[in-house]
Image 1 (cartoon, protein in one colour):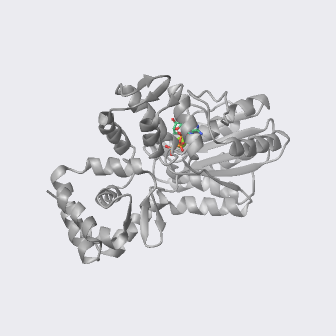
Image 2 (cartoon, protein in one colour):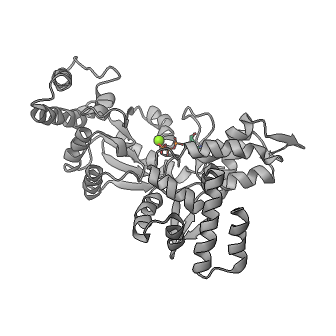
Image 3 (cartoon, helix red, strand yellow):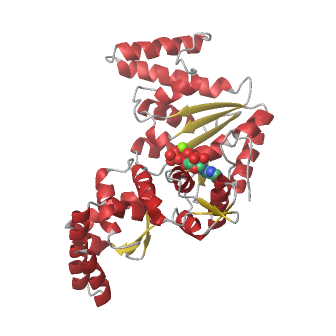
Length: 385
Ligand SMILES: Nc1ncnc2c1ncn2[C@@H]1O[C@H](COP(=O)(O)OP(=O)(O)OP(=O)(O)O)[C@@H](O)[C@H]1O
Ligand SMILES: [Mg+2]
C-alpha cells in the first residue's frame, strides 16, 4: 500500500504516491528559487484537499511556508479568498504599508459600495503585488482551495498574475471541482495553461487502493459483503469513508475469525441517506433526472430517460451533461453509465414509493415502445405494482 504519513490526517493517504512525488519535486524547485503553478481538478470528494494537505510535511522539511486560502460560496465579498490567505485570519494587516493600505481599502469597500470599481482595481493591484513579492524573503506555497467558488475580485487578481507567468519563488496550487462551470474561472485556467501551469486530474482510487483505504479504516481484513459495498463507491475516497463510517456507526460490522464484515444489509438504508446528502451540491434538476434514470439501472439510454421523464431529449442531454462533468455518469456510445453504483442506489432509494412505482410503469411502456426484451419490460411492470 502506498501511504504518506504526517499530513495530520486520521488515516494515511493511499494510492497517491505518484502525484505526491510530482508535487514534492515541485516543492524542491520552489525551495531552490523557482516558481510553479499546479491546477488540481477532480470530482467531489476524490481527495484534492487530502493530497494538498499531505504536502505539509515536505514543506516543513524544506522550510517552505504554506499559505492556505479556501473559497467559500457563502462569502461573496470582494477578495474574500485572498484576504484570508494573505492578510491572516483577522483579514487585517497593518504592519506593512501595502497591508495597511489594503486593510483600509477593504474597510472602505465594505462601507461604501459606490465608487467600488476604483477601489477594487487598486486593491487588486495591491493583492497582486503581495503575491508577487512575498517570496522575495522566503519561498512559499499558496494553496487556493476550491477556486470554483472563488469571489470574482480574487479571480481577477489570479488572472492578472497568470498573464505574468509563474510567480517566482512560489508554488501556487489551486484545487477545483469540474462543476459549476464559471466563465471567469475558465479565463484564469486558460491563462494559467498558456503560462505553463501543470494540470493534475485527480482520478478515482484503484480497486486495490479502495480496499486498502477501507481496511486501514476498519483496522483489519474485510469480508465479502462489506467489500462489495466498498466496490460500489467507484474509487471515490469520500464515499469509501462514508461506507466504513456508516457501517461502524450503525453497529453493522461483525468480526468473525479476524474478518470484519456486514452480514445484515439493514444498515444500507442509513448509508443511502448519507450518500444522498453528499449530492446536495448538485442543482435540483440534475438530482431529479438522475433519480428518474436510476429506475432504469446502472446504465441507461438517453432517449429512454427522456421518455420516462416526459422531457425533450435535448433538455435531458443538457442536464445530464452537468452530471457527466461532475463525474457522476460517463458516456458509453449512446448510453450513460453511473460511475458509482452507490450513488445510483441511494437515488433510487430516495424516490418516494408511489412515484417510484409510476416511474417503473412509464419505464415499462417506454422500453416496450423502444423494442426492449419482454423480460425487461416485465421486470419493470412487476416493480410498478
Ligand atoms: N488518497 C486518500 N487516501 C485516504 N483517504 C483519502 C484519500 N483521499 C481522500 N481521502 C479521504 O476522503 C475524504 C474526502 O477527501 P477530500 O476532502 O480530500 O476530497 P476533495 O476532493 O478535497 O473533496 P471536495 O470536492 O469536497 O473538496 C476525506 O475524508 C479524506 O480523508
Ligand atoms: Mg476539498
